[in-house]
Length: 215
Image (cartoon, rainbow, N blue to C red; front, side, top):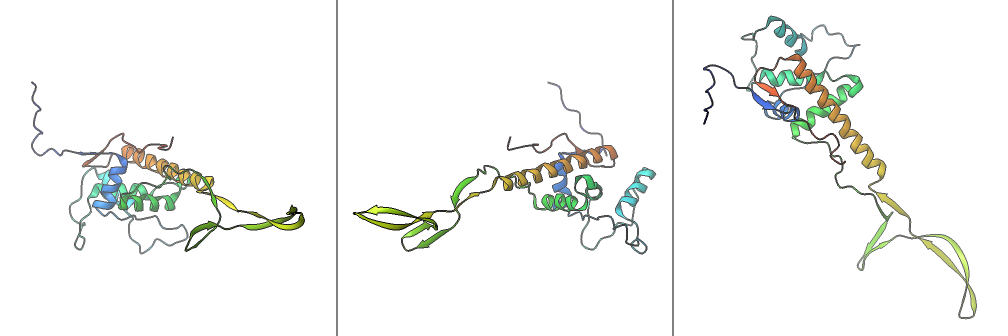
């Protein structure tokens, strides 16, 4: 049987991660911070260099700069900072800053957007009153009718039970549109990280969440 050759001494073994796992590692494990670009009407003087600028300069030099990385009580892996900077650059066509915050928060919590799995609209009473005998649907008067009862004409009320659909079809559709938007953002982040080629110890794989898990 052929034996696997040991890795060369000093060679770094990259960690293979899908984009969702890489995001969760960066934001949840490494606690990377999302540094969003400043609004155009804000004067950048006095704010220092952004993370994107530092990354571009590091890539131009082609080497890692020692020093200048001092934090109080914690250290964030540089690959995690690259991932966070890429997320911060999500274009407006995919949701911009709002989507960047959502991607980061979901990754930090280790969650996938709720696309309401198994949700089926059901016709239910709009309101239910409960007492010691249990629950009972609320009815309303929608008209009157003349009926003959025991030889006498009487006026009786016509009752109806207002109903509603829960969850509503639009609620389900909205949740699934939100999931699709999140998926598109992850796909953009993955392509950006692969194109940038600045990750040192993380190797992105082709693994992606399901495009439409409800299909």
